[in-house]
Image (cartoon, rainbow, N blue to C red):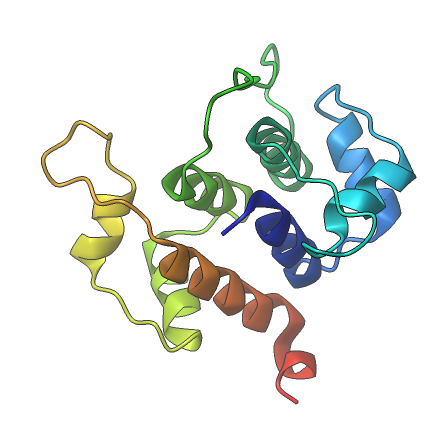
Length: 160
């Protein structure tokens, strides 16, 4: 999944308007203008499409954590180096923190998207990369998790 898709799906799932998105970016000292926001929200292939860098998505997710859980005193957002890649595992971890999801919430979200996983599979996604039981989070799992949180936060409005 490209980062633009993740950003667009999170925005839709959590019903974030332009003003709220700009506030979230500004909360991590990365103010962007509304035109740029619209450009990264465009679908790939559309005229004004601009690719959302991994570092920008990471900052947005850090801002979302600050917005949903409160900003930690004395902490500043970690800025990814220009060439660094934000893995699906990192995205899943940051969403879990922002939404204050426990293991069962994660499993419920995946089950509601008809993508059941076991507790051990789920815990493997959150292990350190060098751990022997670490499991890479695939695009399909991330996509289904985003669908699950959309169903949870948007409810029956999404079931048309």
